[in-house]
Length: 108
Image (cartoon, rainbow, N blue to C red; front, top):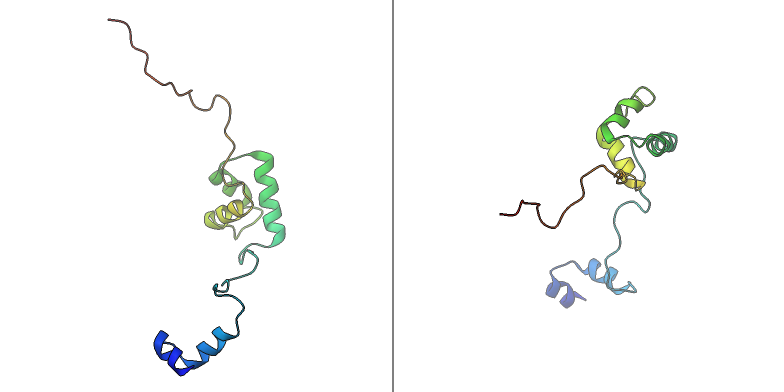
């Protein structure tokens, strides 16, 4: 065990931990499930319902929700929307001109 510790440049207790493992993959670090440290579950539900109902851009959602949730910041709103998969608004018909392959030029 000491030879392995010396070979890999770690302590013998680390080698003991390695020997007790079933696989060679590193263990996942961090929280097991994502949750906000700033927003409550009720706040998140309010934000998601507001966004789905109004389909407003991020800043407009922020200004609309700040009277209800005073501690809401732009970054926490964006993280909440990203976490629920609604950070990008759906593409609207007629929002952008259709892309053409080539520009139209007069002959000559």
